[in-house]
Amino acid sequence: MQVVLSNPSLATCYWQVEGDATQHGYTVSPARGILEGRGQGFAKTQVVEVTFSPAAAQPFARDLSFVCKRGRPCVIRVEGEGTVDEMMETAMDRPRAWNCDGKLSRYG
Image 1 (cartoon, one colour):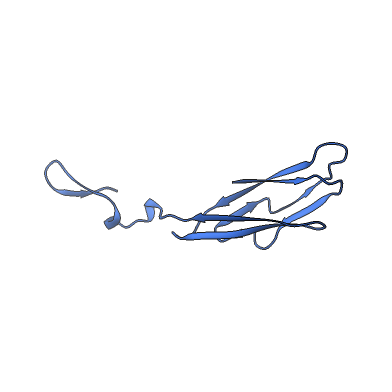
Image 2 (cartoon, rainbow, N blue to C red):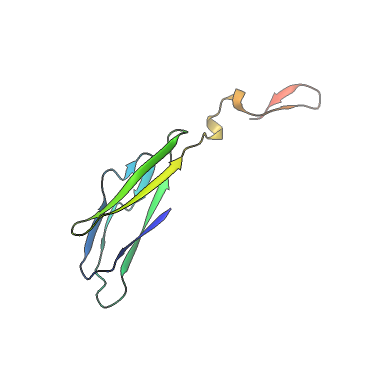
């Protein structure tokens, strides 16, 4: 997921993600930065990438708080759910099929 930070003011914004940038399966990159003031032109923007790599097959949620040195914070809630990787399944969990000779075989 991408988040676009914008600075429509004239002042420079020094921002960062509050807390650990890699928490609860979520990674924020970059985790801090500088957005120059808009000056006479359009608002300056920066794209921030949020990736999700859960460690377990369960729901995960996190509030991402983007804070500025001077200014109001912005909070975004992200939610995701981990799933079981096929490579981590046991042999008994894998689908089974019958061979042409009538014997049971397992995939994988």
